[in-house]
Image 1 (cartoon, chains in turn orange, cyan):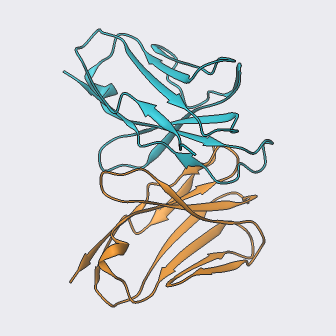
Image 2 (cartoon, each protein chain N blue to C red; image 1 turned 90 degrees about the vertical axis):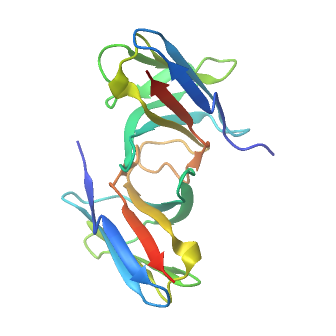
Image 3 (tube, rainbow over the protein chains, first blue to last red; image 1 turned 45 degrees about the horizontal axis):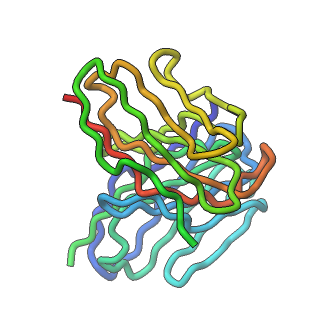
Length: 107
Length: 117
């Protein structure tokens, strides 16, 4: 079945720094979604990307869908402690989730 | 406007017992997904259901696991003869959209955490 791979698995970030997490697929995707799960919590929808090359921004978060619709990225600027959690990408109709990038922040 | 409701939130079972996990989707949502999450791991798709229909159960183990979404009442994930390896968080999510190409946003419940002793 289809799989999406996320890298890195862990991201340790100094507060105020930027970082990017990547989501890659071997097949062309019809759409991709991003979710955030806080420690001990449940996944919460962040965004959906559908169009080739699409870029969407939510405050300090920038989401991008690759031109070939096989990869996506999430870039966070000026990381804050509230950004702690695991970020998952999920693809297509049954939403195959990546393994996630777990983010910790050093104050 | 209640969100996705899952119960029980925590369930402890001994090996060989049965576990029944319930999920009531958001009002107006007719599509339910079940995912399993092991500690420190991602979400693994198990099954996708609509009312009275299993659409995709490709992620379900062939034995001991079953799911249903009856016309009336919540969706139920049933695990028979539980083993220690079944210990995990089981998340239910619902979506209002139809179609196999685009699920739209998934709304997750808070999960049911199963511990098998």
